[in-house]
Length: 81
Image (tube, rainbow, N blue to C red; front, side, top):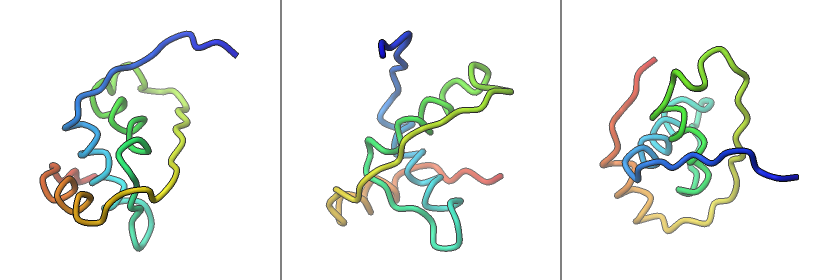
């Protein structure tokens, strides 16, 4: 398979995606490493690009330092639906 496109995202959007997953993914939230939030970050940065489409993103791993995770998520904006 060959990639047709790539999306670049800002670090702030990545941490915002991490925060969103923590706040909105199930009862206990979903704590993910930064790379697992990249798909969410792309959607946050360019909602029009993905509007009305089914989007799949891979969320993997728990390979994150707990202290670093709390610094990132604590600094990220809180999104409310």
